[in-house]
Amino acid sequence: METVGAPEWFRRAMETPVDVGQVRVDGIDINFRAWGPASAPGVLLIHGVAANANWWDHIGPLLCESRRVIALSLSGHGDSGHRRSYSYEMWADEVRTVLREFAAPRPVIIAHSMGGRVAYQVAAHTDSLGGVAFLDSGFAKPPSAGSRSGFAEIAATNNRIYRDQQSAVAAFQPIGTFDRIAPYMARHVGLRSVRRVERGWTWKFDPSIFSALARPHDASKPLSCPAALIRAGRNSVLSDEVFRATQELLGPDAVYQVLASSGHHVMFDAPRELAEQLQALLHTWS
Image (cartoon, rainbow, N blue to C red; front, side, top):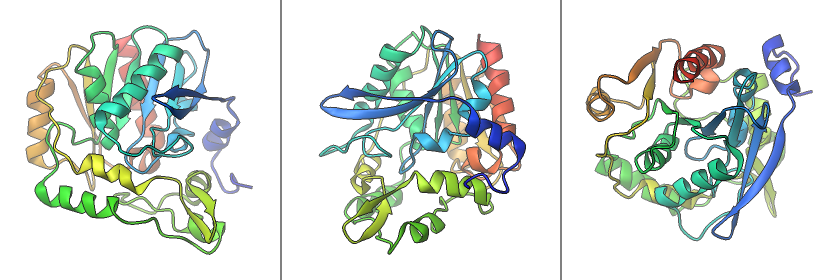
């Protein structure tokens, strides 16, 4: 069983009822998962690059008691369809469609890492959000030339193929976690991050998604909604320079917090602490 050795809170999260659905955006099916009452205030969770909606399976249930929490897989990720090319603008359109179709008015977006760039694209062009929480996201400055070159190289390669599902799942260890992910968590998410192909098993994400990260993007427009930045205390992707740029963009009224015990992947390194901070933010913004 996937939950063998898991703590009680995780087992309860896995037992929380979840709705699964999809919506078509520009010819591609976008899959999502949702917890909580359908008519409750909306919260949308956006994953980072190469991740998927299932990365939030143990977080969504911790936030859904009085909210409708939706986690989508952006195109090129998870079980959503693949495109011929990717951009932050297209991913933002996918988010807008999910919000329009399935979320109550004035939803809050919670976005991790690359997902923060997508969330910014949405928030910078609307006044209809209840708030945006950026989780260890360096969205306020474009990637360095070296990073863009690295992203372009990844986009041009094929995902590794493993001989069997067990080998693929065993290799699941996102870059940037401070310690190895708890085995019960790694198995749950890992199983949902791989797919069968002709010669074995490989990751679900389309490597060409990295082409979007290789292009410069603009993040200069102030946001009209409440905002927060939760920074990882260890192995954060935010350099001091990027953090200062984020403060300049979001302004002094934004909330700035640190998850001291967490690496970049906060939903794995400090899930309950993250949920507590998010609950407090949601309460403040409600």
